[in-house]
Length: 578
Image (cartoon, rainbow, N blue to C red):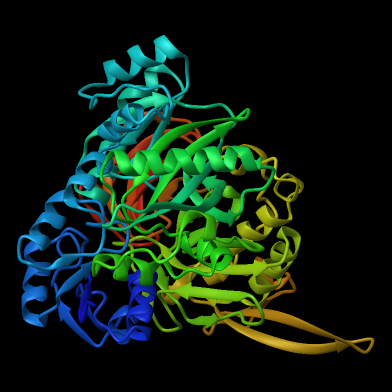
């Protein structure tokens, strides 16, 4: 068995891996950037080593710094988590070449499946059909246009060496191809360290259903069950559940067997996920994620298996101790991601800042995997996932109601979160009936009820929260007051608690400001240019996502105050329109 594991990651996944290591008597090593010096994963680990730097490229994507930490700590294994280097062949080989165990698949399997183009080819050779697309890396937007004209619009540009919706752009018309490819390549390079992209057909109303697999080095490959991850925004998941609703058992078995075929085709070992798009009774291979998924807890709750434990055991050379027929799936599990995002109006814009309050839920069947606590800062430089709230119930309806109760118990102040949007999703008739798709959140749901709250102002905001309890006709009523310490006036809010997780809306002035800290990656306007209300003036990268900053009124640009590469703070004026 492994003795000391270095977790080459941060946030909730690093904490989650370390917890299982602790239960198994395995020592843990954290690595951290300058901004993460006091982060939760550092506090949980047995020992920690500084990587230096602030950005991901300077720290968690710095191979030499991580290798130095491995040597200094004497770790005999590395768990990559997800994101960062988790699907990077060069990193895996750098680890194994030093005689250190990489807790994941062999580098050769990452080579095949980490590249989404070669994974499509491997799946086809295994007899599993994928979504129609080009099996070559894009070299120009002209190739996107040619493909779209051939198969029909819209089409999807995707990062060849990534997943999770990062580096994915939907192109609705030929004239949008150039900007979309440019944006996809920037995001892919920022998040995965590789800019290559490919293009495929974009299905009209699909469900995103993935199959968890587990394979040992003794020839055993099993499918554990599916997860429905169709509730998404910007092609990134918000809600995941297992089992999938309205999903025939014969399709489940066929998809599981297809996932095993794909895994065996690349010599896969360890935990992995084969993703499919499901529409009109047919499923199409999408990609294979050669790592642990963010949503792995829902599979754990319905199977009773600890997937991280099995990752560690398989990496130690142990065989699986159960067969396909012995896997039992019981009840229903649902997970919501708690992202630091302002969901007001359906914008889902990043909301970095200091978490000033974090009340965590409890009770039967409730699990919270968090990477932050009160007093921790969600940085603009990293992914904005604060944590995951997962529940289990005997039935889907019991799990859904339990999750709504747990969300009501969860209070996060200082940053906006997606919890209010999660509530809208969970209470929607389409979700209750299981008729939603990957496009449903953005095309069908109404988030206008999510009101702005000063909580999104963060530590630099002027207002503070004070809760007052009063009795009205004998009934206890809780009222939230937002007070400006410099003013004698205050604002009262009697919104339900579930609406305390939204953000700040724009002022509608001619001064275009940025809603969060970040880096300007593109300036779309020049002085003297006429713009319409809602037109993008700059593109801001924050928390590994590109965000369009738009003019709030029509007029003529009189000043452009930023250039590409500039760092900006919340509220900075970037463009003036008169």
